[in-house]
Length: 399
Image (cartoon, rainbow, N blue to C red; front, side, top):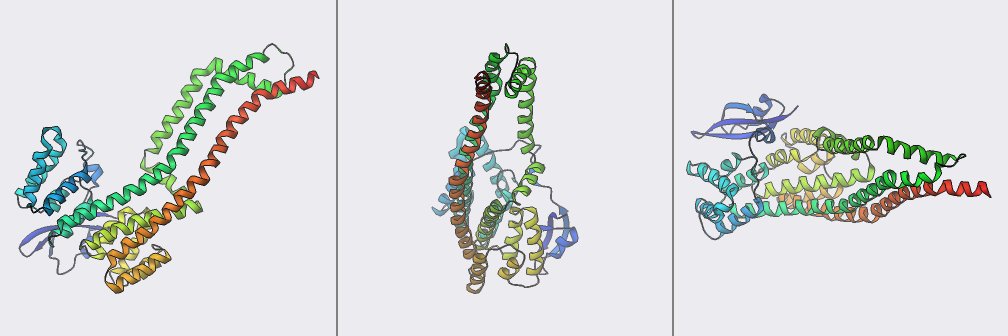
């Protein structure tokens, strides 16, 4: 199983580090080119979430911080001066921001570049941001790189909001329908069934109502606790990575949802690759960094594609051969390779898929919401019919 390895290199009398994604230490060393330096040490990197689990996670408004930092840098301030100004601006009212900036300044005072200072705080600064900053430090395009990353995060957040917004109304309908269903089962039916207790000969539907009413009166607390326990267990199960992965695997099998999910994954993947390539990151390294955004089965395909790309094959044809493109994306990648604007074409691919996703979300809302209303209405209507069916049967027998 693959992982990340931190490789220490000796380059021009300086010790530097590079993070490689590979299946073993030897595979990580094999990724180091002869002009990159002499390998001194290779260590496996622990996942950031495990490393940061022991400490208290610091949450800050990263978008606002990057916006203010890029504005100060574009105004002509040096990096350390800009960070000191932001630290003074934060004041005592935001100790978390001050702590983050203090750690950054500490690393910068020791001569470390900004990317290394950010890499020391993986719970605050994502690896993609670190790679973007690292690719821009040598070219002096740090403000532009921060702006590009802000634009990237804004795009991803907009797509996430659209998806969440499309699911919000169905979730509210399900919650209200479930509440009405529980009210009728635990309040209406037990009281309504009292009407039939004095009767001798009852139809099957009335007997079923009486059975449920007695069950609620005798074991109502246990039933309520059991239902609540099932709901809590379901919520806790959905918070585990294994259950979410299993549900995602099932969703990938549904034809329509599979196509929409594939487009969403590709849009995020190509937007990330475009961000890194436009910032100056080599294509292979950009693909390696973007690999973790893919589901496991697509990440395995990309791993095979990377092996062929290192042998000199074309990007567009290789990704298409491993099922990591659409017909439009394949043609745009070919154009980008010929024109030398592969990063810009990756962004165009993401924009094209965004429009397709917007249409899919809109269609989902128009089709799924009325269908869900019909299902909830049918469930409530079935209980109402069951309530009145014994009365109709008794009336017909008396007639």
